[in-house]
Length: 485
Image 1 (cartoon, rainbow, N blue to C red):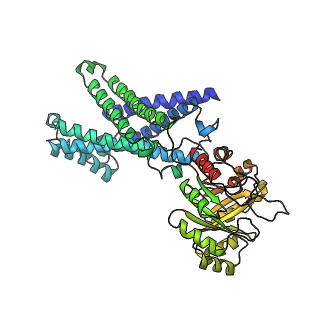
Image 2 (image 1 turned 60 degrees about the vertical axis):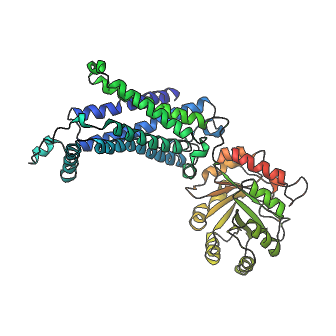
């Protein structure tokens, strides 16, 4: 298997190195018309993405950072792998065609003899649109007469203006390449969430522009080199050298970005967010908000040591308004109870423990008009049988350890469960929370293993021997561990 992997990498890098040259030489020899040249460039975009992906993966593996602590990457055919592949390809595709497109437009705008250049391009594109080809031989076979476009006076180019356009396009393309690739996952991160973050701050501000500068200088240097008269005797081999140089430029830019991403000094945007549940005091609420949690939970269940009266919850809700999402935890609620609760306390979401099936969650969602987080108690694979139905009616899922039969509380029991069971859950893009026995000491490992959208904790951040009393220091430690995971 390692040998097969090595052979596939050799093939990817080799094809990426000669791909642009093959497209160029094919077009020069008349073997490829405009349409097929575009298809060829699409293949080049795929090869460039694969090369950048493999190169970054090799760097991660050498530095022991593949999968944030995992020894193997998620399979390319997994949901995360496919989404990452699609987004990564789109990125490289946009980079390749963005550079080509901007440079082409710049050429058109900076030629003094613009009429001839526009006419030549217009004829080729017009024939492609009307007849599906711009190959004179194919057009002649269907009775279409073609005329030779005017010869372009290459000496009429405004070189300073063209250089300015190429530099400007290079800065834009390279900057957005750096901005996106910095947070695009390999195969272990969540690409759906990755693009919600800006890499400007992540990359240390000017690093993205430094990458752009390196890309422009290297590109300009190679262009100057391959236009030297002494290299003219190389003929078609010049295109092969230029093609290999283009791949080198891409990999150097990728290395600069990945080197920054893998730096121990870099704090990447959090791949997982946190909810702290069972908050009962203004002091602990401030610790939750200051620590960077995205959700806070208020418990409305009288048997719980974290239970809040409507009056106390209303005061905390007002304190949190506009600063954090407020979640109300309810257990087998009646419609009347929900009406009373929402009349007294302003909430952003409901976390519902109910055993009446997916239909009840749908009813609560419709009745209250609030997003519903459906709780799934897990001990074994069979406990996940309702997940497909719940995904259709709930806004998110929360997986918690299944309580003992004689337990009074449906959650918050400091119990954990075998996280391998979650591998059987078909979650798609449904946001979900992991709960059950999480602490500042084990949450990073749990995130690395399960890759949840959120983690939820209650008893794991409470003072020793004081159930229901939150410890601000533990809250801060838990949130810091989540941010580092």
